[in-house]
Length: 121
Length: 108
Image (cartoon, rainbow over all chains, first blue to last red; front, side):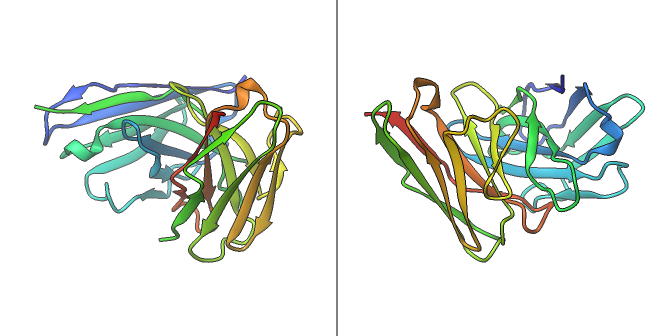
């Protein structure tokens, strides 16, 4: 069974930093691209970052570029999101999600339960 | 950036009736469109990808159609567990994914 379990969400002050983790199991982690998607309270879904299966290529939404860094450790089956210079508008539930298999895919077929990041002084 | 617009924002439907949800893209995304269902306090669940292919385990009452800029998610004979928020998402220019604002399907 595919499982994605996020952790690391916390209350942090504006300007602070935080690292989120996503532990994957039930599939060959090293063969799938992965994403972070966030959802502000009462709002819709927003793409944050993506990373290729081997970690060689990373992508970030303009809203977080230069402040967030996605990475992965395939030996530990874990995805990370290093978040810096946090702002009030970064407050959200952060989900990790697996990109679907196959060439040309871009749908997200499995999601974790999410971890809440609160940015407040 | 490709903007995805969903309508209506809220759809009131009686159990057993059909629900039709729309999603429009600001430019063509071919068939690179997915639909998700999200219930309160839960993560989104993939329903449809490739505009019309049901994901594993998704009941046949869910169907997707469309291509280019206009897409539809149809839920025939709504069940109690189908009342939720539904999002469309384009992946035509992966990894830059964009989601629609969502349609809430509520009990009439």
